[in-house]
Image 1 (cartoon, rainbow, N blue to C red):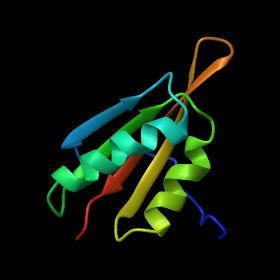
Image 2 (image 1 turned 90 degrees about the horizontal axis):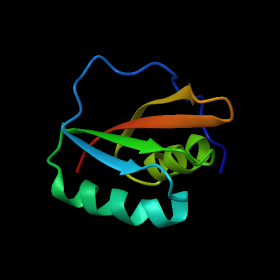
Image 3 (image 1 turned 30 degrees about the vertical axis):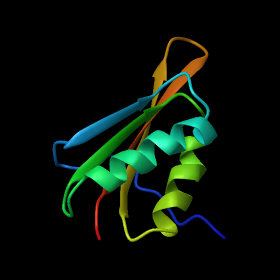
Length: 93
């Protein structure tokens, strides 16, 4: 499955919940994300913070396989060799 073009600018909305997966692989962090998705009501915005570079592909795939909308994946440089990825999902039923 091809990953669509992903917006790289944070949405103009405050997140309703944040999952901090920094220092975890996407495979381990996805369970925490799925739990958060179950607890949020439609229209909520979920923010996912990650240091795993696969966040740029794995979270868009998650959004494509669920009814949730991918709002953005923002990449920031933290320290010389470290990047942080912040993904925003809008929750739908």
